[in-house]
Image (spheres, helix red, strand yellow):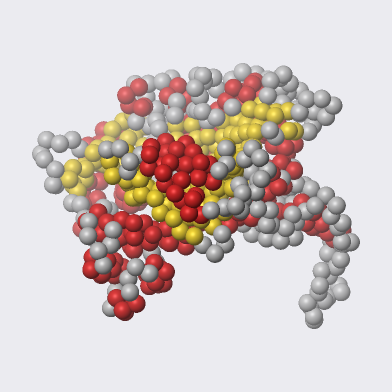
Length: 288
Length: 346
């Protein structure tokens, strides 16, 4: 389940912006080197056109594409594709190391729902994670869209999905020094906006979830609802405020954190696959 | 003029919005009116500050005068800083006559005997507020003028408002100097913090409109109707409920404007209780939570929750007691005894 720690560690502890990607047409895994060269030329051309990525510093952008076979769920899944943009300032000495300025990862973890009836020419990698400057994301995205006739769309995460995530992750076994299970609510439409952070000790959150979950390894909608209702009613008992009437915008646990704008951070290598599986599902719903 | 002083003055002027520079220099009074006339306030700030430094050079400014300009800036933009409230305590009840000169002398002496290098500046304001600026050094290093602490003391009250610099290690010494200088024997930090200094004063000096226990609510009156806008075909659903909420809100929050706080934090150590049909957690240990409310104007925000349908009226006393209890940090534990539903805050 957990692959080469080196490679998958690339995904941990970074803030990733999420996109859904429609299937790629005539994407050939053997041609990764070619694609890297083409993308590199495209980026250089865009820079000439005046797309200022970094002001004042002359940067040569190097592109690398690689496969991450560790990041897949089932046999049907396409192995993930990692895109890395690195730079070396023209001012710095020849033997200095390249610095990675932008990373993107196409992946599919248990995406059978989408890949099942897909014609041969299409490659299913519905989830895209981007880390780095928005301008690079835009350039790379444009190239992929033009080259493989696909569409990128920002993946927002609904309060409904966020509740699933927090319930699932709160139940995971973690070490003593784990961070709190935190839910952040926003009430924007008041005369003065209000934000509420509700953080629960991870042991107590897990204890609550353990009494709710009936079958280990399985989670039902009803169980998630009960978990959230318990948290809401404990809060209401103290403050008389109905959290269910506010907007859940962010959840955060020792496993991962997720924001409704479609930004996640994965913190625990053991559960990486599980988180990606959930996100793949969200991406597929958005595509279909 | 020392170049560190010149640089400090230059940076202080740069912080000031261009339209306010002339007024602030006038308040400072270090440059003559004639000198101020020579300044061109319509150029970019970089140039204005350079010219100011040149004039200060002519007048041979030292760090003491530069520090006064800094106090004036921070007094004008006091809400940029985060203020904490401290309360001093005396043994006896005697009201002593407050001697400002004596206070300043004792304060300086206490700090200077501990740390050779400190810059201490005082400035008094009309509302009886004494502003103190302290820049901290060590026996071997000159004071860091860029990270001073500010103290605001109203001598007729036991309260001190402190905006400490990042160097928290100097806080105990500062507190000591304050009690020695003001003839108190003890000082403690209150659990009350805000950007709005005036609101903190309102809260501890009880200058906001409180609701008293004997408050008699006025009977719900129809709101004054704008002439010509009455359409008798439009009725307000749930009017009595809306009015009930309005009345309860008024009782809880009072009539006047609320003091401005940016957050309230609650450490909950109460038991988790669910309704009996939910077959869930029933531990004997507390369900540990940390709840933080944030808003540009927290109390106004909380006041609007019930009318917006997001909260019950009356709102929980944990929230409405903030101004009365003069705190925005709380630790809530379960109350033992007959009423397991009620809470205590220590």
